[in-house]
Amino acid sequence: MFGSPQNDRKADEVAGSVAAGVARVGWGLAQAVYEGGKVEWMVGGVRRGALLGGSGVVLADALVGLPVVPGGLVALAGGGYLGVKGGMTFYRRRAVEHRIHESVSGAFGFEAGTVPIGISWDHELPAVVSIKVPPKSKLTRSDLVDIESLLRQTVFAGRGYTWAFKWDLSTGSCLMRAVKATPSKVVAPSSRAVVSADLSIIEVGSGVDGAVEWVPSKEAHVLVGGQTGRGKSGFVARVLTVWLDRPSEWQVVVLDPKISGVVPVDNHPSVLAFARELDECADAPERVVDALKYRKSLFLEESRNRRKMIRDIGEYRRHVGPMLRIGVAVDELSDVLRKSGDKTDTGKAFDGYRARCLTALDLILKQGRSNGIHSVLATQRPDASILPADLRDQAGFRCSIGHLSRSGSEMIFGDERAAELDANLPPGRAIAETWRGDVEFQTYLVSDEELERYAFGDLSGVDG
Ligand SMILES: Nc1ncnc2c1ncn2[C@@H]1O[C@H](COP(=O)(O)OP(=O)(O)OP(=O)(O)O)[C@@H](O)[C@H]1O
Ligand SMILES: [Mg+2]
Image (cartoon, rainbow, N blue to C red; front, side):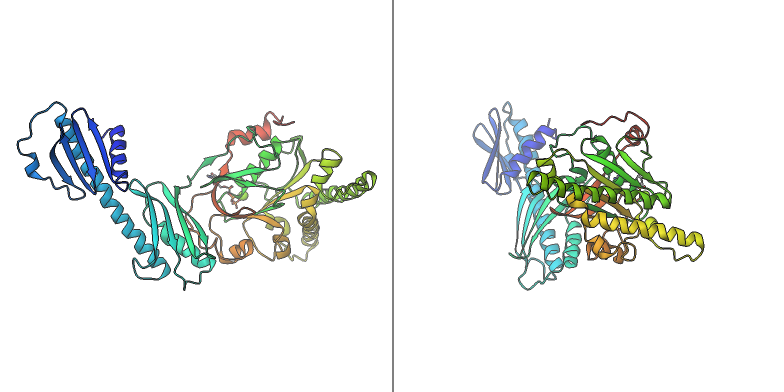
């Protein structure tokens, strides 16, 4: 009977209400009372025994001459159990509290216990820890990363939880929330189960605060970096499958110069172009640029006709009628942009295609937003010599899947945060800078069955 989940809960409830004062649990004539780290049990209103919290010491005198009263033994066992359990909770909290004090102070470089913190508990685990940052600490982002990683090693090892941090350096505080640790695999929910009214928004993964979204109207383009085998192509596949499922919102252009990573969706009705060879990788974005220029002239013309300001796709849709967004996915940007410098005729021809591709992408990145043209660019080699900084700056949603080199992290985020990531993170574990702020998340994994459906199966979308 004892030790069952129900009684565990009961014991926890009892232990959990210490802070509030006294807790009572009764069965028939018997009753156990937990107070200030000590459990006492009563039978028929008479005190029969006690256990001191944490110590497990039984007050022997109270046990002498214990009469057998119906329910009494049950209460005795129950009280004892609650006492031990409650005492352990008390004891464990003290131990955890100590560890938090130590690591928080240590993280800021102060002596243990000197940084003021407040803890609220969920049984034996801390739920929220608020820290008053020592006034003299001038913290840089890289300090925060160090401190977070130190604190992450505290308390939760192996318990399936981790800390979510919210820093507010203007008030000199940090709030650490215990959150379920991100799982190492999250299968993508079917994009056919569309509930959002805004079909442009794409859920790309799962973070501690729920789904992580790419919102193209806020962040026109996505840049994804990551070393080999981390999940960049998986990320692109997720975005692609959502685009394909929404033919009333999206048309699609794919550049796959590696000829490996991307789902072969050439025949899908929403796909305008699927480029593999370098010449195709120059042609395809140029066609997108044609569409972009046409849209700009259309906006101008409709503005004049209707005497309305039509400056972007949103205003066009409001005043004129439907207009699809165009999504451009590039899996391995460096393969289409990195100049070889090869002086042979073939080398020169290839570099010519690359230059055309860059010119087209430049326009797509800089002018795509207002014209409903968006891109997802994935690369193993985030490098300013491949993607110039002014183009990089157009990507509002920037993401690193796993660890990056220092220079790679600098290129994507402007600092070294991705270089600080553990090199052994599971594939798909990502950090991103989005219009909503910084997030850590697990990118959605699209199953092979789903991918096969898009590539070879039923091609009708949900919304079309
Ligand atoms: N979100 C994810 N969750 C779990 N596993 C994943 C996830 N994304 C990718 N993987 C696993 O990692 C493997 C490599 O992923 P992917 O091909 O996307 O890597 P990549 O970054 O594109 O590598 P490369 O740079 O070599 O092309 C996949 O086959 C898959 O098994
Ligand atoms: Mg890949």
